[in-house]
Length: 111
Image (cartoon, helix red, strand yellow):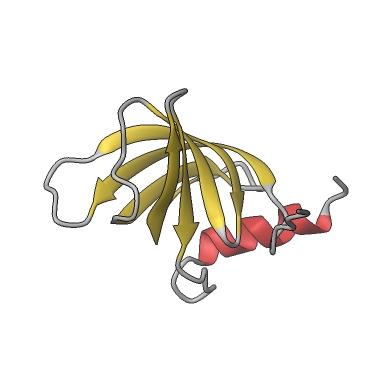
């Protein structure tokens, strides 16, 4: 079965802070890749699959500015090798302007 992604997966160097809905404490992670549909993460401890989450991303934009912006999603999968995937709830420019602008610039660049 051939499975195609809806959005192009883009490399990004970013730190993330993951907060599971209903929990006080969060955890640090690193972002392996990003698309308009989700995030691939390197995690240090297990995440509960299926739970709603808020992810605060810290990254450097095209102008060299360090940006911090929040996105909302759901934990889709996790592997024992400390990787996880989060689906994002419709990235919109009015809610996540820096991330969407960053993605637009990356999507225009050649692979």
